[in-house]
Image 1 (cartoon, rainbow, N blue to C red):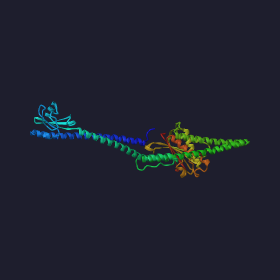
Image 2: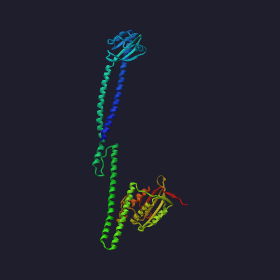
Image 3: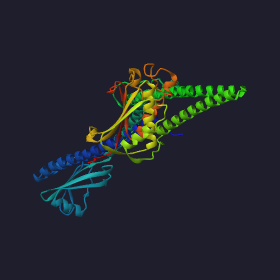
Image 4: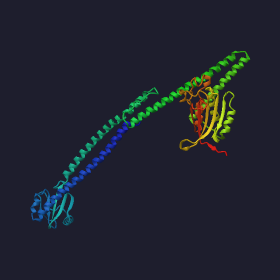
Length: 452
């Protein structure tokens, strides 16, 4: 099993801190080493300058007071030197010739200086002055410095690891609280504890709570949909079963025929309800296909009105401005018209006007074709108007006086689904010039043909 987020982040902090600290300490060691070398060279240069000045003045005994010095004559003979300096030259012939031309710094190994030593040679008249210092103490100090810095690095890494662990834990504590609350949450309307502040975790907690609110609202709508669908299916099924049971127990053929006819009516109602639910399910799943045909709206609306069922007891007027052609699924759009007319009749309307015109006031000047159905009924009540196109949204008694008249509550929802499948929109209001409700269907990408 992989590491959790907290160990990974703490390890990342520790590794990053270790790399940075090691790089910083390495740079510090280099700087200190360079400064130490510079200090050694500066000390040798000062000693050499003093000894050169004394030798030029003829004072060869000045070398006796230096910690390590030689005054070398041409040919390599040592004419003076400090007590612990050897009697032979510490420089070879080539180094002496080079030192007679310019100052020379040499690293060598000398027993009197206990190992590695740094020498500086400069010309002093006819002589060459050599001064030296042992590097053993400096090397020992460097090693001690490395031990101290290495120990400091270990302590620093431990502190970084511990600090990273606690800091990451503190930063992730709101996430842990949200995770625990989500694990124990049983109510879809519950809320996660929100992190304080305005950082990313606070934004995440607020976003998750907003998501939970949307999910809760969606579940409420789905639950209401299932409850309403169950209720709508239960009623015709109960009637259907009762009619069939009566028909089976009634010896009168006329009564049996009436019972079967009533059962057939309920079966047709069930079939229509199942078809409506299927249309809505396909539209929500993106599987509602269209068989588009180019039609002229004036002739198509007239033909659709002429073929309406006789049960639609309405006085219908058609008003189409211009000769408009549209690419629509005629059967789907006929369903839209029938549902809108059924809605008007269920509301108690007697007169309906179907209008069609092109509106150029859309976004970016885009033209849309509007199909408008207006009636002289009582209009939509305030409570139903805001949710008229929701599934199973029922009108109050002022708009529909009985359950039979209101239907299953899917008529306008089917309208919205079919119009959406055409890429359009549908709106409802009570601004009909006939005094009742007005429903406008707006379809894009339609072409208007100007007839001379």
